[in-house]
Image (cartoon, rainbow, N blue to C red; front, top):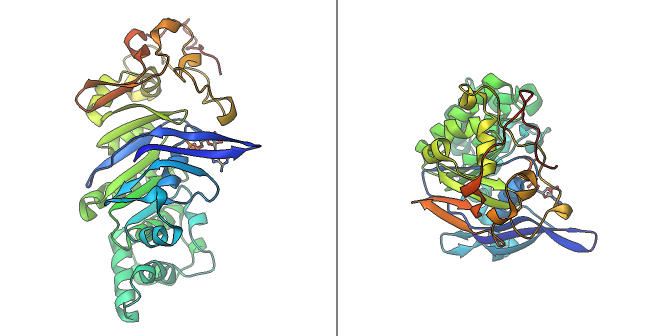
Length: 331
Ligand SMILES: Nc1ncnc2c1ncn2[C@@H]1O[C@H](COP(=O)(O)OP(=O)(O)OP(=O)(O)O)[C@@H](O)[C@H]1O
């Protein structure tokens, strides 16, 4: 996507929740988009899928030579579900409570291939259920969503998402609603699917621990903008942006050797209160002098493929803390 901007109307003005984002997802890679709640990750995912009904979308979303941002809804509908699949945070709300699992997956298949015979359809559904690790496909085929555990439901949602062998899969916080042990199984399944179907996968999460396990590349999002992007190894070993450093510090394992966590306090400002000029992160690092920020923060390539927004990263340091934990920055 190039210069993608998604704005919501609040009262009589539009506010950008995704602000001039340029990103590329390659085949056979997991691109993680990470950031706190409210940073614009879901708004970005929904824009790619064309799921916003009332947002203003500007910029371009290129897919196989077509610009999805400007495709008529009928054409976008055809692509969605066939070439693009989406896995949502809450599997229960993604499924129809009144329909057996088998029919829901068949429906997804039919949407894009109405020539399949009933027999072939059922065989394909059983194959899909097996592929996503459902132990008794024949049995689950007949079940309703409420009869399944959260983890099994998410597997069904994944089966629907991959039913038509999509080339792009978007997983929006796919494990947040699940128990820890189940989370690992679902992540393992998504990773396996990457090599099985060769799709490009966008994994949206607020959890850098998940990112470290899963991603090939990572884009860090703050207040609607990408502030850092790099391959996973570089991001973990050589993060530059103060926001990324703070996120990494909040993973206990990453900071085990340190005596305390350096986490920048505060939250992502709401859309209306978001500073639109200068570095959006500056109010959370007030100990860094103003001159360290660029008036119009640009992305700087610090090594091949590793980009960081704003020059403040060059003079950033964590302030000394008093033993009770860091408590700096405005909210
Ligand atoms: N339909 C909408 N109308 C108005 N504002 C919205 C709408 N959807 C999202 N927003 C706002 O856009 C900003 C980004 O929201 P978004 O849900 O994309 O964040 P997120 O990073 O995905 O957070 P979370 O992890 O909590 O879902 C937030 O300030 C949110 O309040």
